[in-house]
Amino acid sequence: MREFDTETLQMLRVFEDITGAQVRDCILDKTNSSVVFIVFPGQMGLAIGKNGMNIKMAEKLLGKHIKVFEYSEDVKQFVKNLIPFAKRIEIKNDKIIVWAEPQKKGKIIGKGGSNIKLIRKIIERNCKIKQIEVR
Image 1 (cartoon, helix red, strand yellow):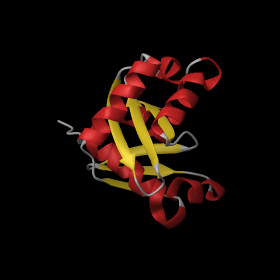
Image 2 (cartoon, helix red, strand yellow):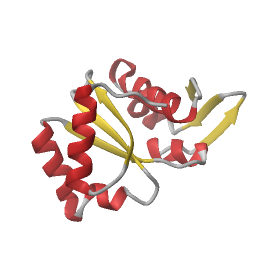
Image 3 (cartoon, rainbow, N blue to C red):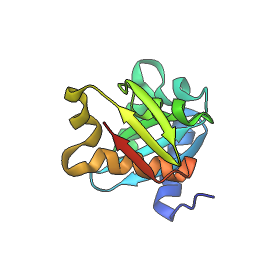
């Protein structure tokens, strides 16, 4: 069970009210001053809105950059949703291994490892897998 503090709950409610999408998880990324919403399957279109209007409106009201990903019960598909340019995804012994082209690895990992830390946190909260390796 995911627990949310008051600030996160408020952002979650505002996002759901604006978009009409149902949110499974919400993570404040204080490193990048952004908020990540994990929406239920089939809710991505609602979350984004026509021409991205829902995201833009939510960003304006919340004062934060917003990232939205669609959840999937299939862990490989969920990881693919989080890392769209992964060439291959493998799950071995509660560890996710992601293969990517060399020029994409930096984008996956992020400055100072910020992106991979966020991806790891999302996966841990939603799939109970704690390890992810990028090759």
